[in-house]
Amino acid sequence: MGWLSKYLRDPTPPAPPPTEGATLSPELFKKIKAIQVRTQRLVTDVFAGEYESAFKGRGMEFEEVREYAPGDDIRHIDWNVTARTGKPHVKVHREERELTVMLLVDVSSSGQFGSVQKLKNEVAAEVAAVLAYTAIKSHDRVGLIIFSDRIERFIPPKKGRAHVWRVIREILAFKPARRATSLEGALQYLAKVVRRRAVVFVISDFLDQGFADRLKVAAKRHDLTAVTVTDPREVSLPRLGILELEDAESGELLLVDTLDRNIAKGYEVLAADARTERTALFRSADVGELPIRTDEAYIDTMVRFFRAREHKGVP
Image (cartoon, rainbow, N blue to C red; front, side, top):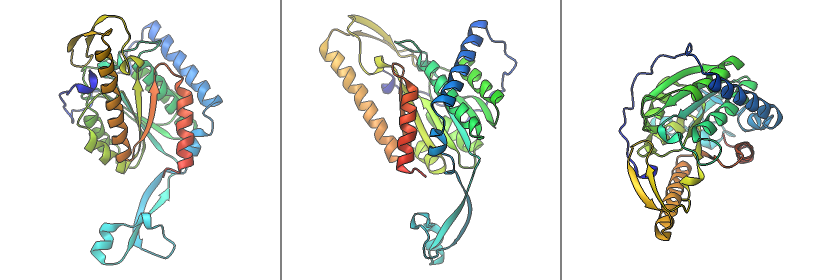
């Protein structure tokens, strides 16, 4: 149902103040600590070297525009300046050894769903924790934007393990004020608060519409990866008879006979079409896609993604 929904958007709201002093329940504290310990071990044992090979040394900061010289890479030609001056000019960049990594995490109500061991938002929090720890271990800065159909929280990029703890805690403990999603609003806010080029991971189920143009704009400025979190029940329906399904974000209710083969097949086709359309959008926007499923080991998927990225030589 989610990919059929259209949600109201308020793309430029002010970010609410942080709640660092909020008290955590013992259960939530235990869960956050477990994620922290597990992800720290994964980064040390499995992810060592993968992140740096894929990203470190690839961050480039604009320095100047100068006239083209023999041997310059033609991909760096500044066509606007070339047209204005009548002579070919190239953009010159210098390497940034310290990267800024931004995590955009969707906390809309559709994340409160899970048909296996973990909810989508729990998996999203773990993936974000792995990315944050990996960046911190490589001496990079990590920032966080939590969003629904408005900006729920913004944490500026910083370094340090204590900062990663806060990132994990904010994602897991946060109670959004709204149910729906606005990827467009989140990407627009990113453009306002992060001016320089950054490595950006958008962690969401991407059950939203109308964000294509803003995604393409963001991908031109930043090194952007879409981390798509999917539950198996969003791919196919279980054969359980008549079920009442509710869209977590819109509240729309629908009775579905899951034993009806036509309905089950139609559901699968709609879901497959939505995934195909989404992947086509990412490719056209030059956005990397990291598909995460709640019923699969996400760390293996992440390692494969980073290795494939390194081999492709993504700039």
